[in-house]
Structures are given as structure tokens and as C-alpha cells.
Length: 327
Image (cartoon, rainbow, N blue to C red; front, side):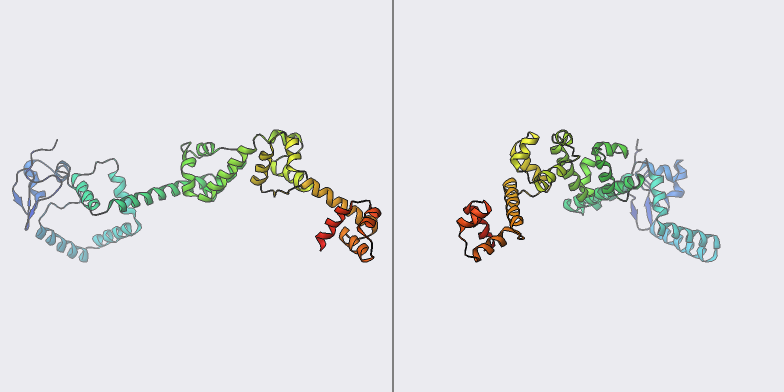
């Protein structure tokens, strides 16, 4: 409990070269020396009245005299110079800040520090404070991601997630493996590595859509949906209808799968393939590189479409369409 006091909590009342004692209200050049009359020491005094440990309890002139005396001692005393140099090294390296933070850990901030913080925050706009908080949070997330990836032997969090999801692990499983909350990657991957998040999301969606395809195509000897679609539609020229009939899905499901796996849809694939084979057979039969060259030769010789049709056993309308392609 804070004892009765004559000066505000969290501040030191100064008047010229004098400082007021919180306990009795009297004024002194140095309250530190006076505290012995109350049976107090300066640490308990600072703690009781909410003062920071570095807060001076002396008047300004007394502080200046002490500073001049210390400068003179530093010039003459090698031990003080060595200590001063060591302190400067600690300051530049950040060791002093870290040591102070470690010493203050678990200790309640004094009222004086809280008042300083509130005064500083009051000068900052809410938008700027929010932006600072956001940046600090982002740095924390990125640091956690980098440390997690390094601990598991990866250069970045994206490489870790891609490697693990390729083996079928979920984001929750990867988070648990890394010692994080199970939802950490689900919540923060898009923030720390947007490219990896997009790739993983697309891959997971694709695997989810392909789940019902896999039992069917594995029975047909294929390990993945794209390989099956490329074989049937591009290599064997099966139509969408034929593929749908083979796997037992709707045409729209097949068309969606083609688009999802980047397999270009070929309209009338079966009929076009048959037509191409038919044209190649006619050209081979008469020794021409293609059917268009055969038709050009026969028309140049003055043969009618009916005569050419009788020669190659193909309908005149089909021959005209083939000739029109080369026109």
C-alpha cells in the first residue's frame, strides 16, 4: 500500500535546486541522503512512489556538480575509464538494453513509466499506433516462420509447407510437427508467404476435387487425373462424352477436370481424329503426302468431283470440304 505522500505519485517535485520528499514534504538538495532519517532506502522509496529506478532524487545543481566530479575522476582514474569504455560497448552492441529488459522481466512498471508511455502515446494518432502494431505483429510472424523452417531444415516456410503437403500432410499436421498451434499455418501462411499459400490452396482444392476420380482412374492404370485425361483426350482423342461414359461422371465434371488440370479441350475430338485418319488413308493409297495434294492433282487433271469420289470411295461432299481447307 502506498504511504501518505506530499508529492504526486509517479513524479518528482522539483523547485530550483531542491527536491521534495514524498514522505514528509520537506525540500532537500538530495532526498537520497535524507531518506535514512525515515528508515528508508532509495530503492524502496522509488518503488513505493512509482518512480523509475533511474530517476534522479537530487536537485539540478547537485546533479551537475556530481557530473563534473565524475568527468574529473574519469580523466584521472583508469578504472573508471575502463568501465566507461565497457559500458559504451554494451550500449552499441545492445547488450545493455537486453540486460535491462531481462532484469525488468516480471517487474511491474512504475507509475512514472506508465505516465511517460501515456504521454508519448497521446501524441501518436490511432492510425499510426495501429500501423505500428501491425508491423510489429508481422515481424513476429515472419520471425516465427523463419525459425520454424530453419529448425526443420528448410530455407523458408514455403519450402517446408510444399514438401510436407506433397506427402499428404495437412496444414494442421505441419503446424503440430513444428510445435505451433494447429491453426497457425491456416491463419498466417498467407501473411508470411502469399505465393506458397496460393499454391497450397490451389493444390489442396485440386486434390479435394480429384478425390472421387482417383479410385476410378487407378483401376484403369493411371496414378493421377491429369495423366488419365491427357492420355484419353489428347493421345487417344476420346471425346468428353466418351470419357464421361468411361469414368461414370457427367460431361460437366469431365470438362471441369480438363480445365482444372490444364488439358485443352478439343471439340469433336473423336470425329476429327477419325476424319484425319480417313484423309491420311486416301493420301497413302495414291502416294500423296496428304489428301489435299491428291485432290489438287486430280482437279488439275480435269477430273470431276464425282469421278474423284468414285476413284477413292469417298463422298463428294467430304472431298470438297477437304479441298476447301487448302484453298
